[in-house]
Length: 161
Image 1 (cartoon, rainbow, N blue to C red):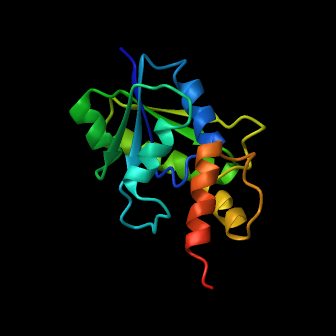
Image 2: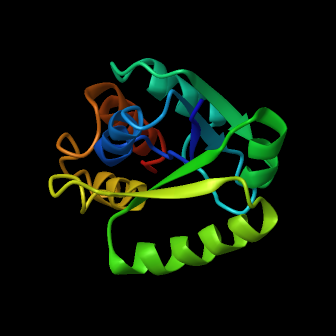
């Protein structure tokens, strides 16, 4: 059985993420979406808010979990044999290649599979969504409607009068 994991911060969830998830489901018997409890990053959304975004995005998948360990340690403990990563740019590839090589050293039985972003989503990142939203720009082509509403709400609440 091919069990895949798609780890990320998903802060917020974008159409780029959903594209990779949908396509990963075609190569995995079971796909786990793993939301990182990234202590290093300042998140806009709580873990629960990010999980809620997945619940309201209109796509079905096996599991959404939280993790705060090395992805390969989760894989070894839970029978996961494939890490799915999305690649948008050459810079993404260079970064992800190093991580994939490290993961292979730490967990030889776990493969990393790179999926290239589709042309329609290759410019989308969570960072770009937050930046555009911070200037009250239109993010409706980058995130699902539910997420767009939540992002706009965050930036309205963070404004000083």
